[in-house]
Image 1 (cartoon, rainbow, N blue to C red):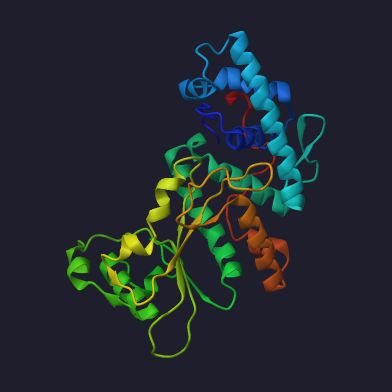
Image 2: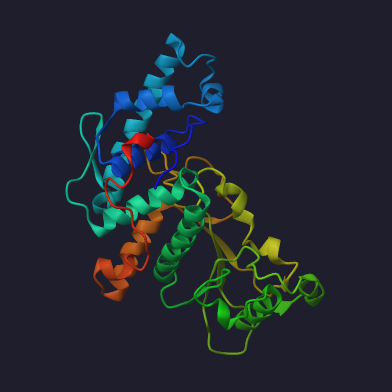
Length: 321
């Protein structure tokens, strides 16, 4: 399934922690702090060495910095065990990450988010499929976030796209009518008829007042299944970016869903990369999925198994490590 775990090209502890979890879950084996230092030495790229300000991965200076980074990584893993609770498919025991023995649906969902956050491990066909799976998972979370609102899967090939039209110019006009907004027809007419994209809008959440007055509360959401390139996506579904198509009476908010656990060990954001959006990362996603299950009054399997291709514990070939 996995072609290559890829190199480690920066010192971000939350991303190295992801790699540790991926190896532990996909290979069904323990990962120790010593293993982390081994990964850094074997898989560390030029970007990592530059971030650590060392020239030679085999030097004593590099080894010392690898040890410091591995300590940070273990703190991240311990934080996640507490933060994610029964979603977390590992135990952190004396600087060792240990997969659980009995895997639940929540654990498999967490593993899927891990896979979605490091899509470069897979071939292009799987990348395309898993990106679609992530979008479907975000749709479930959006239903909980916007309880009592309407939730539209607007993205190309999305659940509700046919209601708006497959051609982008038709879909944008249909969306404008739904939200009681005005279109900028000159710019919509510039779109080629063969354009069946989504203008960066994967999911639309809006409050239907049931009247003809304008000013509809709404959010446009983008789902970015990327490990470190997602900040570039934060403008795609923004009202500012879409004013070429819409003359907004009320500008919608912007949501960016990411599968990454974008947290420091105190629960704060790593930095302000997502400041222009309402950022929903891995932790907020699982919290919303719990809320979705609560709202439905459903069993966890009924919601989470709507996302296909869950990853089984130990599904990777150890020879690929």
